[in-house]
Image 1 (cartoon, helix red, strand yellow):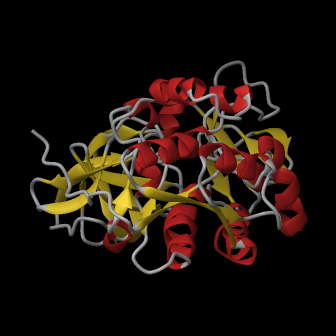
Image 2 (spheres, rainbow, N blue to C red):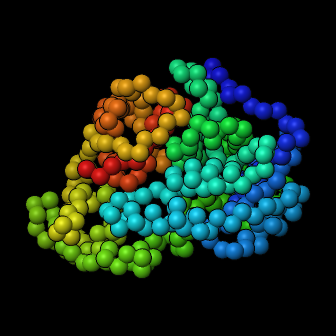
Image 3 (spheres, one colour):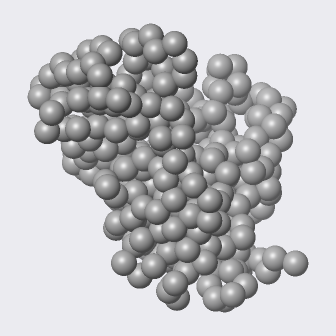
Length: 350
C-alpha cells in the first residue's frame, strides 16, 4: 500500500488557488470549498494587463474572490525569451517545465500572504516515497492526464502546504462535475485540455522565432543518410529531432530528422533506427528525493511517453536499458522510482 503524504486539515488559513479560468482550476475551487477551505482565486497576468473576461465571471459564479498577479515582465524574461533562445540554439525546449518552478510555484507563491496554503489543478498527487521516506510527487489516479512530468523542476520546499485536489479524480469526472455545476465555461474548453504553449497564438512558434532571431531563417540543404542533397530547409530552428511531417521532401518512405550540422547549416534525414539512443547526458539536474549514485530508476523523456528503465551516474550520464527514440536535446527528462517522482533534468546536446 502506498503511504499517503501528510495533508493539512481545513482551517481558517486561506488557500490560494492558481486559477487559470479553465475547467480544472474551477473544479478545484469547488472541491476545496466543499472540504471547508477558504479559497481565493489567484490569476497570473502573463501576456495582457487584464484577464480574459471569462476569468472574473467564473470566479464570481464560484463565489470566490479573485486576485490578479501581474508577472508579464518576469514571464517574458524567465519563460518566453529562453524558449525562443533555446530554439535558436538548436534545442527543443519545454516552457511548461520552466514556468512551473519559476512562475507558478515561484513568483505566484511569493506573492501570497504569510500562512496561505497553495493549490493547483495539476493532475498529480503527493505521497511518501517508500525507499527514502521523503514527501514527493507521485502519479495521479488518471494516468492519461499525469502531469508530474511538467513538475520535475520543483524544489522540495515548493511542495510545502501544497494541495492537489485532482489527485484522485479523472478528467472525465472533472468535466462531468463542471457540467453538473452549470459553470460558465464554454463547451470547447470543457472538451479540450490545457494548451501546451499558452503564449503562442495558433501553436506556430516559427513567425515569432524569425522576428526575435532572424538568423534562424537562413535556408540550407537537406541531406539523406548518404550525404546527398535531397531538398532545402527554411532554417534549422523550424525543425526538431525526430520530426517526420512538414519536411517538404519526398523520400519514397518514412524519413525522420536525425541530425543537424549547424556549421554547414544542414539537416539530415534517415530511418527511425537512426534515432535510437541508449546513452545520453542530463544537465541542470534537480532533486525532490536525494539520489544515491549510480541511481537505478525510470525515465520519461517526453510528456505521455512510457517510462523506461535506466541508470543515472553522478556526472549526469544516463544509460537506458534499451535504445530509445524520443531523446531530444532541450527537452525535460523526468526521473521516477515506481510511481514516485524523484526529480529531473534537461537533455543535453550531444
